[in-house]
Image (cartoon, rainbow, N blue to C red):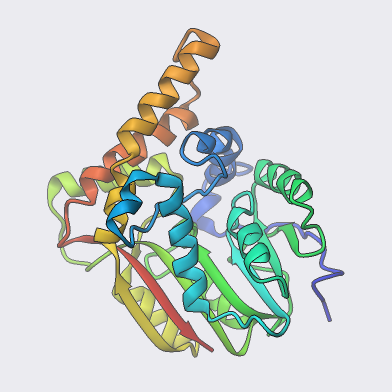
Length: 306
C-alpha cells in the first residue's frame, strides 16, 4: 500500500491525445519553456485567473488570484482540527498547495505534474517556505496516477483539468474518483464550453488557436463533464458559473503583456521569443475575446463528494 511518505515518481503513461508524435508532449514542452514567464502574471506564480469578490479587489491582480485560491479551498470544506490529505491535480509550481499548507497547518498536500521545470521550481519554493514536511510534489500523470485507491481526503484541479484529454475529461475524473476516500470532497475550477451545438465561425477559430497555444487537447463540455462525474459515483455535484467574477482579472491581460514585452526588450534588446513563449502571450489575449461569447463559453467552479 502506497502512502504519502513512500510515494515515488513513476514512468508517465500519456493518453493518445498528447502522443500523436512519438516522444513529443506539447504540455511538457510548453510549460518547460514558457513556465518561467508566468512570474509576469503573478509574482507568486499563481497560474490561473483571479476571483473578484468586492469592488476594491479590482485594484490588485494578486489579491484576486488569492481570492480564487480561497474560493476553491472554501468549497473543499477542509477541517482545521484534524489531519487532512489533499491532492492538487496539475499543481504547477505548487503555489496553491503551499498556500493551503500555510492556511491549514494540519493538512498534508501532494501536487502532481508532468513538467520538470515545475517540479524544480516548486521544490525550490517549498524549501524557501520551509514546508518540506507539509507539501510534496511528484512527477505523475493525473490521467493515470500512481496512488492507491482512496488515498486522499480532498482533491482539487485549478485550471488544470483543461489539459486532460476528451471533452468530458473522463480519464482525470476516473482517477480523481478512484483516489478519493469515501466521503471526500473535490473542487474543479476551469473554463468550459456550454453546449455541443454548432459554434460561430470566429469562435471556432479562436477556440482552436487558444487550445493550440496553451497545449490543450480541448476545452471541456460542462454538461458532459458533470455527467461523467456522476458516472464515476461522485455526488452532491454543484455547478456555479463565475465568469463575471473572473472578468476583472482577465482585464489585466493587456497590461501584463505590455509589461512582459518591456522587460524582454530591456533584458535582451529583442522580442525573438520561442514559439511557446509567444503562445503564452497570444492565448490569454484571444481568451479575452472568447470570453465575450457568453452563450457558448463560461468559467465554472464544480464541487461535490464521493
